[in-house]
Length: 178
Image (cartoon, rainbow, N blue to C red):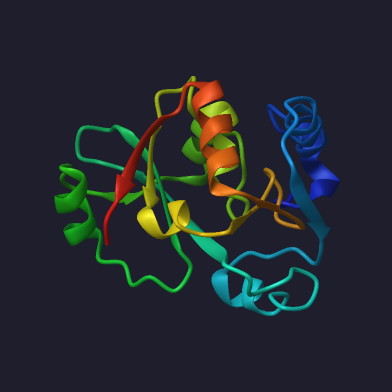
């Protein structure tokens, strides 16, 4: 069975290895960690402070691929413990009828499988018209932990470097003050 781990990265539009090579070629300084596959925030908490360092201004995130009533695609990146009310979130974003996108649309628009969603999926999403929304807490962190298109790897990257990378890809980024 195909899952979101690096074992199946070659079936993605952009492999995790290719993304990491692109990040290195761009001169980005980031930390790289391999660990068990993480499908949920609860799974992620089992490796935080162990396989993936914690503290020092680091922020762990959760990511939602959403569609609105007008069938527009949104990637929402929040601090991992942030409570989410989709109706209130939609109001802040200025969109109505937010719902979770299907696994098929997730692959079509972001090029990843469930469990591996992250802002780094905008390497595919920017060209597919996905709107990126990020929690302002991400901007203010020392490092952001994100999956590089698979869920058994994590990179720690400075927010300014992440934003520069997203801008290079042409991502449409908006900040959420929650």
